[in-house]
Length: 67
Image 1 (cartoon, helix red, strand yellow):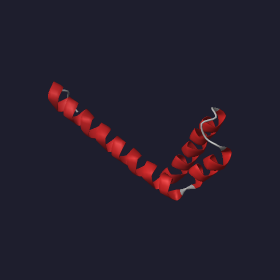
Image 2 (cartoon, one colour; image 1 turned 180 degrees about the horizontal axis):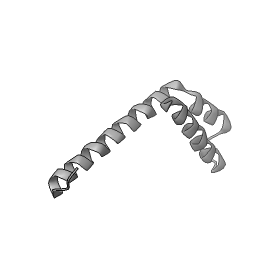
Image 3 (cartoon, rainbow, N blue to C red; image 1 turned 90 degrees about the vertical axis):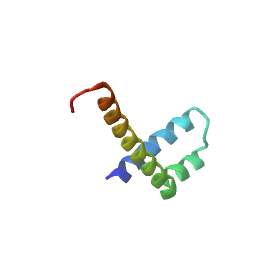
Image 4 (cartoon, rainbow, N blue to C red; image 1 turned 30 degrees about the vertical axis):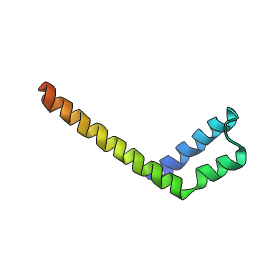
């Protein structure tokens, strides 16, 4: 399910870059269909979510919040 969401986000992101003239349409289709880019974004998103969770836990312990 995550790969589907990442693929959709890549297509919208590539569309924005094409609309702004920062990326050609051929490059955009390769960008949104490349499984290596999708896997890298999934990994990065997982690390970001994990980091946010750990930061929230650290803040809760630091400031004495109950959780």
